[in-house]
Amino acid sequence: MSTDESTTYTAPEDSPFRPRDEARDQARQFVLPLVVRIERAAPPARTDALETAARAVLVLLGDERSLGDGEWARAVRDWQDARIRKVVRRARGAEWRRAEALPGITVTGRAAEVRVFPPVAVDDWPKDLARLQVSGTDLDDPEPPAQAGPGLPVLWMNPEVAMSAGKAMAQAGHGAQLAWWELSDADRAAWREAGFPLAVRTASPGHWRELVRSGLPLVRDAGFTEIAPGSCTVVADHPALR
Image (cartoon, rainbow, N blue to C red; front, side, top):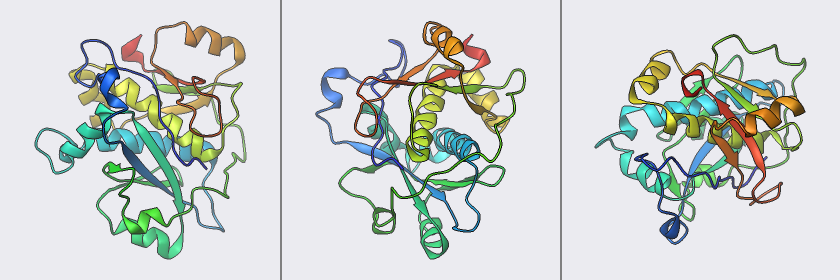
């Protein structure tokens, strides 16, 4: 799984989330921790884990504690003012129970469980999260995922870039966040009220080339792990952005 994922994406000029390029790498860096539950006897399917991780990012962004004067708002602002780094770790048994005891939100998918925590400084992780492993386990889909339903937001993965499950979870989270940044307040509210429905699918090569040219939010990885810097990994295709 990934150890440190971030994107070089910047929001539109009029976005309140647009980081200042000249300062963001000099500021103290923050990271969004995500922990996926992987019990040895019953690991989740890969696509389920990717979709649940993406929804977890959105749930945190839309939570009242992350907004305005909420208790997590300062940490979320500091994180979004720099690179939107995400780290995915895994836990099971007692590790998972300790993670659940920390402030955060658990989001469930079909079988996957992902807990997202308010951002932390990269050099100041909570002890019970810092000790969790980030490597050694990957996830697979027992069957190819079904076609995404009509009108459903889709996070399209690059078919030509191989990624571990953790790396892909972080990238799906990036894609969901970029879509959130570009939506209007009304569209954000509607998506939140619907429970953040979405799908994660791998595009065909031809479709991917069309998506990259479409003007939809595009994740370009910073290249800290696994893939080359600047690699395009995800296009966020939300109907409201068409």
